[in-house]
Length: 564
Image (cartoon, rainbow, N blue to C red):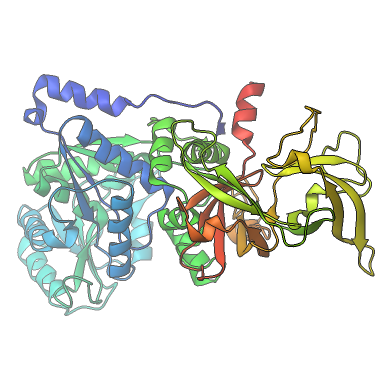
């Protein structure tokens, strides 16, 4: 179900738990959180919620936050992802305590912990295959059964575990499991795997290890080693908490408190890193930073600000139950942020030439126009040139307009924004009958955009002087998926069947006013009547700019709230 109301409470139930812990003196009133991403992909908007929560919680209580990479699977990890994650966290406006940390920092300690578990008779080396382990595990209604290797002696288990570490066995041939209860109602307690054999080089430890800890084995112990007081996890780890607590209790080490919250789900959006990777690998998108991707690097390249993302995370709040947030709310938050900060400028996306026949050929007028006319506290202007030929939007002219059409048409007078009043007198068509040029006359007494006799002119058009226009490419981005839930597929389909074929429209012949090239006051603009746009530096050239549309002007969320 899509969430339809805003939760603006910045103080969540997690804040209440921490406040109570501080009042009772738990953890000696320390607050130490961590953000533990796996470096197997780029961070997305869902991770932003976790980042804002963990770092924000520590800031609110004068505490600390660690950045710890969960690098326990060398098969999927890459230093590129490590670098991108650090960049994204800093871009969002946060800094972690000391140097970044890694689960691999604790591989030696985790190995010693595992050896201690074996010596206590609480862990054993198992030779069952993955398929056999699944069969032995049982079901939600039926208990599992013990592995035939469960009662190996301590000495044999220590020997086999060391030989696993030394690389004597093939991948998949043996694992180390903890001995808990194969009849436990919680399936996570049915002798879970602690170590598996993976003969792959690690991006930090090289070829030192032939065995790697599972996430469930490394998670709680890493928190404990770092002295994390409040281990904030998403709801899918709620059933894992008894296992983490069992490990900490039996190892008799510092016990962090795990608290679960609902992850962020957005309509028209995929949050699985595995599926996002598939989009990249199959060329559906142009890399992890494609502006259609929900990755933080993609949103950054699109032009979304870190402030907008932090505001969004604050607006949706932190809940105990899963829900799906309407993407329109995210766009509404972006729009509010950009409306306040963005200078206004004129750009014609689909040009149609307008020739003002009674304007002198060699005359150029310059109008001093405010960038921030919406913000009276900011006074920054630019000179906008005006000449005999200008470009207007194709959609701003109709030869046979419908009722209540207030833009340009034969015999109709409109205002060219900040310039003058013009009246359409003629059109030029091509061999197909398409209008390719419009002719008009202007009222010389209206220079500056005001009717000299106070007459009402309903239509106001933006424009760009043809002689001074700067060429631009404009990229209009829409939802990457045309279904609210991309995973809601028919039998035999996958999420790629929900790809929106119109997710990107490239307009290569747009025209923008020259100030956007020469004296840009910002990288983000509100193009009058078109939306909010961001200069894509990566693809712009000296004489041709590329603009990404961050978000349109149409605020469907605000309209929805008014109807309610």
